[in-house]
Structure formats: structure tokens, C-alpha cells
Amino acid sequence: MDTTNDAIRPTHYAFDEGVIECIDYIDSHCFDFVEGNIIKYVTRYQHKNGTEDLKKARWYLDRLIKRSEEWDAKWANRKKLTYNDILEDDEFERRAGKELDAQSGPTNQS
Image 1 (cartoon, rainbow, N blue to C red):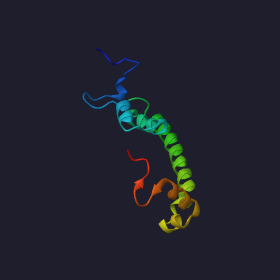
Image 2: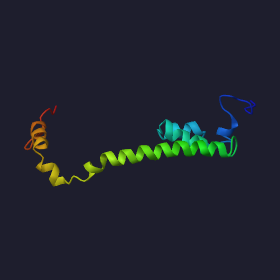
Image 3: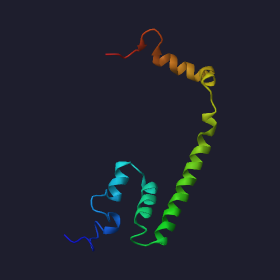
Image 4: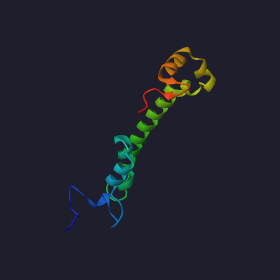
């Protein structure tokens, strides 16, 4: 079967026989849309749109970096909590006391 003009499986996504297709790699690693597009554009740039695909990959990479920085900023304060801070938290003690019995472990064992 000639795949040169195949719209579903074009050669720029699996140009070497026996090599995993880009979409299979993305699926196997559970990458999300943004991460998958970075991989897609970097994988195909030499065989399809050259520099244009690298610029698209960079656009998605910048978006991923921004998302990662926002995530880091959101959780930075929570990372600063020490084990002792958590233990001294009254709300934590109330929740933990209801869920576990220190002598017997979880109360809903079957």
C-alpha cells in the first residue's frame, strides 16, 4: 500500500519502517494536548514544514512553561509546610482522629 499521499497516516509521522508512530508514542506516555503537539511538531519538522513546525513547537512549549510556572507558584507555599506544621494543625488532627483508630487501624476492615 502506498502511504505517500495517505491523509490518515502520512509519512512525516513515521518515516522509518518499524519505528513507533508519533501518536502511539504520545498515547503510550499519556501526554496531554499541549505536550503532544510539542512532540508532534518536533518529530515531523524535518519532513514536513521545517522551521514553521519548530516555531509551532516553541509556541506550545512556551504555553507549557507558563502552565508549569503557574503550578509551581500555586504550590510553593504548600511545599514549605513541614511535617511538624501539619501535626500542629488542629483541623488535621480532627480529620485524622475520625478516620483512624490508633490501636486497630482503619475502622472499616472486612
